[in-house]
Image: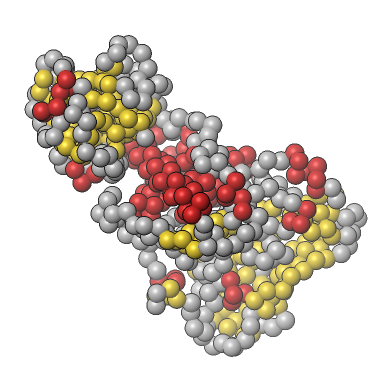
Length: 508
């Protein structure tokens, strides 16, 4: 707590009628004997670009109506200079950013992590920081007021926002890919967005499958070694139960994020040229506003275009309802250590987990995501994205033809490694019934002996690369076969490998 800075929220009145503006004043006072420079982010001094107030009535939080912004590094304009003993303040209408409508008593508190307050000279700090991490916590006293008459609640599609349920989990490919809509976009920008959208869908799918695979093992020791998870969302600490609760929450978040990219109609608006990456209004899915910094970001990697879309998608209340508690990799990593309960609700943490740069293994297993092509050029498919038959009769690879090849030994995927094949839905493994000798299906929700295969590189020992041809040997040593070389069913009934038992792996 920085005792040099005093935070206050005040109001001219203690009671408001339905037609009154709910005017409040936010102020910061410098109680030190020297001037300070303070970042305005996450304060009403810059307006509302995040859910920064804790507004409650009758024991429940009031819905935030404003936007949440993904930013770049701070600039001079982002700082407020406060002389010794002086104050800065901003007035705002609380009802414009929070859904205040119920008659009764309300409480308002400001409680935010900020970059820092310090002696004038922000340039040195900005130059030294590539990430915005919390240094001081500023809290106000609780302000209370009464709304003596009910107001009209804000609605979306005729439904009150605080009544809106979480969106149902739609099975993979149940609705089908919906085309994106564009506002204020050039053709070049549309092309960039479509590529970013495809990459974001792939990254969220991979995250979902990896998280679900470890959870389905029901081996706590394996989950505790989920290194990438605890890098961004916190380790076990003193409570395995709390850790598992966070793990399940994040797994569900990626289920919802991927479902949104795979099945929802998303609108991209490029008409705002602010010097930030992007923003959304959490109560208004699925509209994403893309701004100046988005177009110069890399397609993949840290703070990428694809990662930005995952960041923004996670903000929607019907998806994961994340906030911007901290920005940047360094800040997010520190948040996972200091406050895991905030990390699991932090949008940048979700983005960096999915981007995975630099690479951190999730657990002991390695993952390669691939399409698997039979000898005649047709692709292996798990019908329905998993849960039923496996065929090799698709001329084009789409989502049902996508598999995670899970290397039990982790590390590089090498010839001779033992693997599982996980289907697109993240819920089913490919099984050779009886360990081999008959049909191959994709209806197992666990991975044991019959769901294991030895992958053998046709060219001999070594690392398996994109485009290599391989054989898959079932648990009883029989080879997986695309009958007819492709065009029909897949079995595990051959005692020797020839053309029909040879597959090409095309990495996604």
